[in-house]
Image (cartoon, rainbow, N blue to C red; front, top):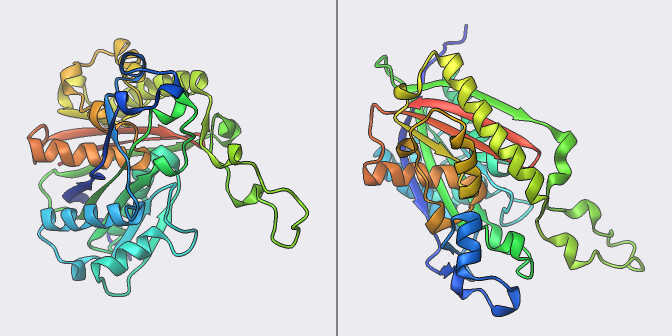
Length: 333
């Protein structure tokens, strides 16, 4: 007979590339400016990986910091799940690279792709292993180097994204009211074309050298900004309403909301229709840009380090991204 355990967050960590690129650093040929970017996105700067900095290496640093925060050693980890769309290689998975870097014993380690919703997907999947007693300590990482897949001649996308990694350690909860209270995962593949990054399927096979190689245009992330804006605003509102209803909570019961750090206009538009104090929002988009699957764990780690969040606080996590995917979760830290 299986045993059901509660699941709590034991520690957090994050890592950003050293190089910071401010809005004014973009070349004049991009036909943009600091004011143009700030007024449309809320972003002032983002971190861009240098040679030798990869999603796996950033994830490894974030993982080490999360373990340190949890006062655990690599030997205590029973599983690693890494959410990413920019893994270093197709094989092996980033999670395996992080496992080797930490020096863990042979344990399950795998990547998960749900775009910007990836971290909440990975966190929810990992929590099931703790809940059933299969694993006790699981490392969940969100790591991205989106600078490698954006078109730096397209001002509508390249100014939005940054690189970075965040990580958490989860484990079984004691009977003290802390832990995961609610989660929901969603996807709608019928709207997949709204956010797209093509892969090997569209590349000509090696056995057909006569076929022209796919043009660079298809190697970059492409996004329908107008439709994504409408989807994201509606999704934030619906997830917040659903979480409060399902958990029988009011806005005053939530200590902090950490949304996917996507675009300040999207966040402002959503909360304009919600009866929710904006001072309960954790937003670091201005300094980091959109780091996809890394954005929520980076923001969560910053909230813990700076005192925006503390043990005992009830936190609502919200994400949405390509797929289309979206998810929410309520945790007491």
